[in-house]
Length: 607
Image (cartoon, helix red, strand yellow):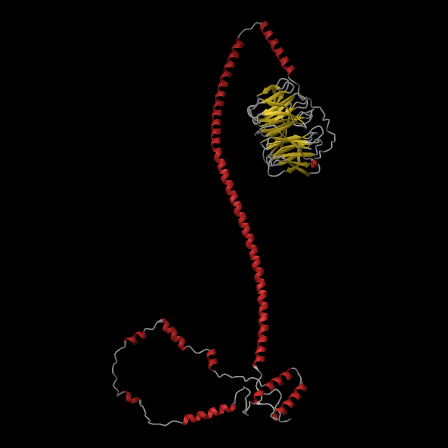
């Protein structure tokens, strides 16, 4: 057992030659060294010649012709210099390593492989048994040289490949992580690309739409150019005529003054003077008897403390649509005593209809332009109509004919309204004035001046001598009928005011403008307390129900919008017209239904 090799050491190769720890044969190197010494001594000296430096002086040198190729070589280019530097550059470490002696590692013998394996895992008893049995078999000659070969390369290769597989799997996992991050980044960039592409398309669509609108507006403006030129020419002509009329008026006034002076110089006998004076007095008495007195200021509104049930507009539906005109219907008015409505239309007519059947009762024809408004006398026997021909016509319903035509306005008349006593009627015109007419003398008793634009609507405060006007100068004004003075002006609208109405109690005014804004004003404290925005379309008209709690608004988007002003909430949007709604009125007796008029030449009943 003492002669057995130590555990884990390298055994000698077959043949008994010693093996160094580096794995090469020492005796082979010794043989090579001896062979080299023998090779150095195997040569014969034939002749020995000795050269001296002094012999050069006696030697005659011959001149050789210059070779052109050598001259060309002297002219080295930059590439030749670089090549020379590269050739003379010292060799790198890699080249030194190649020239150095290479040490080869001999593969493990199979018994050493087993010893190392058992040592690695601490199997000492198995190692002793293996050593004993292996040595006995080897000494007995049982193993042949072929059986004591080195460990097969397959295992080493499998072990190396296994380590390589582990490394490749780690790299694959890292590659998967990188690919997942790249996929997430790609999805993010794709979403951003789709978002920006969609945004770009939307911007392009908006740009194209704006271009189309701009072209349409340009064409529209070009179409209006001739009309503006014609209107400018007409204005200049009218101004010239106005100046000529003023000159002629001044001439007649001067002539009248001269005649008056001549009459004052004439001697009139006393009897003639007395008769003339009596005649004048009688005329004044008759005129005073025909003129109606101004209403008194001490009257009380009988509905000031009344409480009516609010209209249930949330349940209203379109009951029936009536078509009887050829143009847009601009105004609706209820008869004060019977279920009859009157409509004013752009086809130059106004008509009366029985409700709820919608049967035609009466048709009024006589205006030369569109009819803007119609109103019933409190007694119900007369109807007043206003028109774009600058006239106001009073119609006798019983006789079915025009009773009187008022021509005091010089421009289109927009609106009219009767006083609750029936003795006076007020009108609103495009000539920036409102006028009060005496229904007995049929003459203008008062002119209300103060607006700087068209007066679009006028109505009386219930059971009082005050009236309210809505103007294109963005204001709402309250006037005194008797004095003709402006009592109060409400400011706040940003566009032309189309209508202003009182509730039945007379303490609240609702005004609507062309921007779709409706404002509610408290007359007692002269301030705004509520604003309603109906949208982008204009609010053409508005009306309170009997209780004064519900407000219906006629909108330019072909709908009727209803609001509860007490709770300040939106109630319902009534849709059924095909064009802009021009007017809306609650039934004054019960408030169970309302009538709307539209530009689609129809008026509808909602209940």
